[in-house]
Length: 333
Ligand code: NDP
Image (cartoon, rainbow, N blue to C red; front, side, top):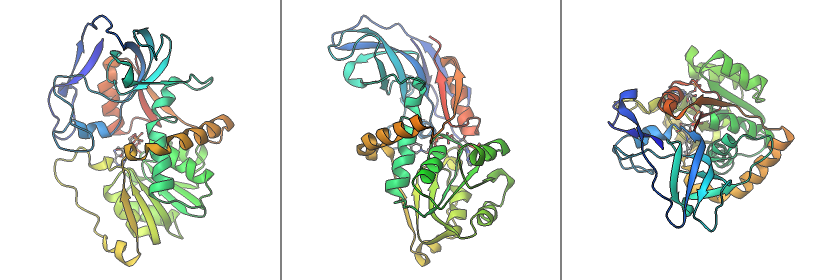
């Protein structure tokens, strides 16, 4: 098995030297174990936090051990009564091309025609569930709301915008970091308006496309985007604080929004969340998403990087915005 290990804890932007690729032999199967060839492994922004040695909702990666993360693969050998050879499984033994563990660590999923297995890491998995629960539960979205989502061309953001549209948003606005991504938002994902935050003056650009303000802000980015949203949210507005990727490689504390007082005067609600605490919504999410995919009402993009040896590049590319939709690594076994 080829696996990626963290060897030093990055300060600021990670570099390839913080990681190493290691080959390990898998032992004979023990009773109850299965051996899986991963087809896709996930790289996700939260993994940057796990590279730091700080207490958080997910424990830090252990130096000199294979990193973990979402992955989907196929069972190639089994000594388990519950999982058989050929089954497709979703699990948390990512950052490697092969894994062998007890069957309890794997969830068998159906192989759907016309949907790549990588979808279980994105549109049928964690990132789309994050969009679904963050918008509908955490931000208490209701039909008629105007919604703004940052990181809108990414895995979570592209789903937030489309779900908001399908659930009856009055207006859906997104921001992203390139002209191509901005075009994608309005032309493919059905956003009503979009802007490129790299053009600057985020508050001004948001105000220009939200003449009646916004009712919901889905924050993937933090920093200046959050300040712009606080300036634009209407009375009683709600924000789901999902992530703050603009700050993950900062070495100094990020300045807070300068307009926090708007929370008081406008009676705003800002609520952070971790998708792991909302998995009870997974059945309704899966059912609804399966329908939207089948009908073509939701479309999705993936950026696929080939080779487990390129997983670190894929991860760094994700932080730099090289992905459109979900970033995944295809494991060429
Ligand atoms: P994405 O697919 O959105 O990829 C990350 C994107 O972030 C990049 O493509 C890039 O797009 C954007 N980005 C990078 N740097 C900046 C910056 N300085 N300012 C603005 N945008 C930036 O990743 P995910 O969809 O997986 O995750 C999106 C967010 O959701 C992250 O903050 C993540 O941590 C969070 N998250 C939270 C979860 C939870 O349970 N709370 C679960 C899953 C994700 P661009 O080209 O537009 O800059």
